[in-house]
Structure formats: structure tokens, C-alpha cells
Amino acid sequence: MTISRRRFLAHAGAGLTMAGLVSGSHPFGIMSALAQTSDGGEPQDYKALVCIYFNGGNDGNNTIVPLHSDQSVSGYDHYFQARGPRGLALPQKTLLPIAVPRIGGSAYGLHPALGTVANGINPGLHPLWRTGKMAIVSGVGPLIMPITRAQYQADPSVRPRNLFSHTDQTQQHHNSRADAVMLSGWGGRIADKMTTVANPNRLVPTVSSIVGPRLFTVGENEQPLSLGPAPAPLSTIFSLTGYNGTPIANARLAALEAQILLEKGQDLVEASNNIQSEALRISRTLNAANEVTAAFPATNLGNQLKQIARMIKARSALGVTRQIFYCSLDGFDTHNGQLLGQNGLLTQFSQASRAFYEEMVAQGIEDKVTQFTLTDFNRTFDPAGTGANVGSDHGWANHQFVIGGGVAGADFFGVNSSNGTPFPTLVNNGPDDADSGTGARGRWIPTASVEQYAATLARWFGLSETDMPFVFPNIGNFPVTDLGFMTAS
Image (tube, rainbow, N blue to C red; front, side, top):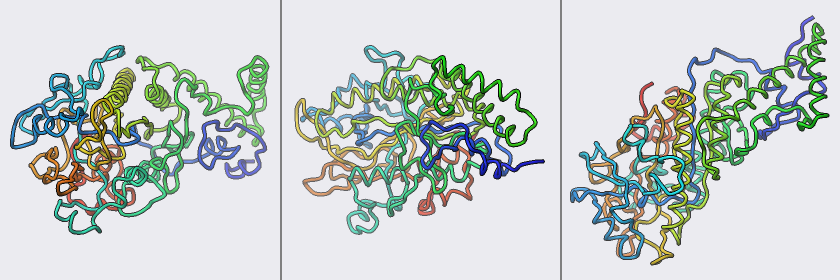
């Protein structure tokens, strides 16, 4: 007698539960996952995308600063003229120099927190620029279609919904659409299209969040796995109901394993035993994956990225060849106290991201795993307040970091602005400012949409051209859909 998986699941009375919080999960979630079938073969390679979201809106104007004095594009003098008198400009000598071939080799500077810092455990992200493992995508923001400053000012219908709002701009970065509310995100929709082939066993969802479910991670059909950060052990994803690691629980576990060995040959029982055996095997593998090679900082983001590194280390046991992860860092809404606040946040980002990259090197897959940043918006070029409490307000287009061995690094990418480069003209009421008149504050109009940025990542990840419009509904509005910052592999 043979019994179908469907019939088995319908009649099974007890089993393992999934301790990781999957939206819509039920007590037999793990049994269902282990009994899933695949509709096709799986890819032979592995790739992962890791989204690092800066909650609140990172000030890109102080994250990447021109060091040069070329008057044909904005130089340090333009920057200092706007921000220096009110105390928001970073001293030129503190900036970490990077050469940008796309802008004639002109020198730009990274925020000093992105390099070697006091009490840091690694050199930070700055050295990855020189080795070509990091790129910057400039002028990224929500767009319905490409727009000029004149079009923006003349026709409100071409503007994204509720510009400069935290809630709306976060949603638009998560779901990629600037003209409509969607209940799914682009990370989740990629999973909708790729899970059948890339994750046929469905032992865990293709998308995981370390900070609870977020719109980015939710698909039309696929739902995310929600994990806590390290040091919570990965093995809690697959656990026996009531198992807590005590001596009594260990004795029960040993008895269960003995029972599994004895009760072979009975179809229903054997099917149940097979599932329990597989879950126990995976649980042990996840326990082993808790040990990583790189030293991670014991910070909020460090613990999140460490947990993601553990999940990636367990990829073979989980039978998954594509994974998408979401983590975040709070505190970037710097209306005041920005110099100190942003310095601490960017230090945390740089140290944690570099540790994660080094762990991917140790695992031998640094070219298969790509970190990328998103944030609500940039901030106004014109400061808010003065002195120690100086900050900035809500802006629009921003610079994003992309990090990994698969990145065509050490350059700026994007769509050219009014000055013929992806970097905006740093002039209030200038050609790239959405504001106008004497009250203009420097809210840069995006030249590259979130959809163009995301589609470039998705294409590298393996999303087919046929599936692009499903994941990115407005991608057809843009003449360029690959910004070129990822390698072809």
C-alpha cells in the first residue's frame, strides 16, 4: 500500500512544528514543508540578496561628499558653502578618498565612519572600494517615470505619492511602485516567481526577515520566515513541540530516535518518521551553522547579519539555492544631533557589513552574496538648526551601497543628472532640486528609480526577463532597466 503526501498530511495527528514565525503558519507547518514536491529541477548555483534598510532616511549628502574642486560638477566648495556655516559639513581632511572613474577619476570622500574607527573590529567598508567589491548607485528614489525638474514643477501627476513622507516613501522602496499602494514587496514577488525552482523542498521560505515581517518580504503567494537575530540559535526553526534541551527532553528525544529506527515498514508511521528524521538532521545542521568564522560586532546590525550568515551557511541542508534576507537599522531620522547620531549608525553599518563580507569569503561564496542598502529618502542639503543640534529634513534621491564579490565595484552607477554624471548638482534651487525659489532646500530629484535599481539586482539573482513586469510593474516606463553595477555571472 502506498500513501500520498497529501493523504498523509490530512491524517497525520502529530509532528514537528516550525518555531520560526512564518506568516500564516500552522502547527503542522514543518510537516507540510517537508512533504512539498518540486515542479522542476533546481539551479546548480547559489545566490543570495541581503537588504539592509536604514530606517528614517540616511543623509546621503554627508555619506558621500565631493573632495575635488572641478567646477563643472559640484565640488567640496559647493558642499561646504551650503553646510559649513551651520555646522553640518564634515571636514575635508576627515573624508575617506575614493576615485570615481565614471566622473573622470574625480575624488570623492566617504564618511569617516566607513573606515577604520576606534574600537572597531575590522577596517570597515572603505578598503572594499579599492578592491572593487563595493559600488555606489547615485540618484536612486521612487519614480513613476523619468522626470525633469520642469516636469516635476509643472505636472503633479508625474510625482510619486505623498513625497517626503516616511510611511509612503518606505512603502515605495519596499514595493517598488510610486503610483499605487501594493500589499506585496519586490523581494516577496521575486520569491513568488523563483521558489518552485530555487527552493523546491520549501523547508524554509525563500525570503527571511530578521526584524519581523516587512512589506519588502511579502509576496503575492510566498510569505517570509521571521527570525530573531543572533545569538538566538538557528535550530529553533526546526524543533519538536515541547523540546527545551533539558535532560528529560533529551531522554525523550533519544526515545523518539529509537522509535524511528524500530518502526520501519508501516506506511503512515514510516512517512511520519521520515519527516521527523529529516527535521532532526536539519536541526543538527543548523546547530553546526551557529559557528561562523568571521568576528561580528555585538551590535544590533551585527547580530542581524550574523544570523543571516548562519542561514546562508546552512543552505545545503535546507536545499535552497536562492535566498533573500531583510534586516534594518533604526535611527536615521536625524532632524537634530545628526553629526554624532549618523556617525554611530554608519560605524555600526560599516563594521557589521564588512564582517558579513568576510564571512562570505570564509564560506567561499563572496561572489554569490550581495548586500545592498535602501532607506526612506535622502535628507535636505540645507541643514535644519545650527551647532551641536544641527540636523536635516526629509529629502528624496539618495546614494545606495552595493557590496559583494559579484559587484562591478569601485565606481558610481545610475542615470546621469543635469551635469552629465549620476551625482547631483549640489546647489539649492539648482537644476536637480525639486524645490524652487528662495526657500529651496536641496531635495534632489531621482535620476534612477527604485525599480531600475532593484531590477538590476533581480536580474543578477536570476529573475527572468519574462517575470520582470510581475515583480516591477512600472519597469517598462524606464528606457534603461540594468544600471550595470552587477557582473554578468
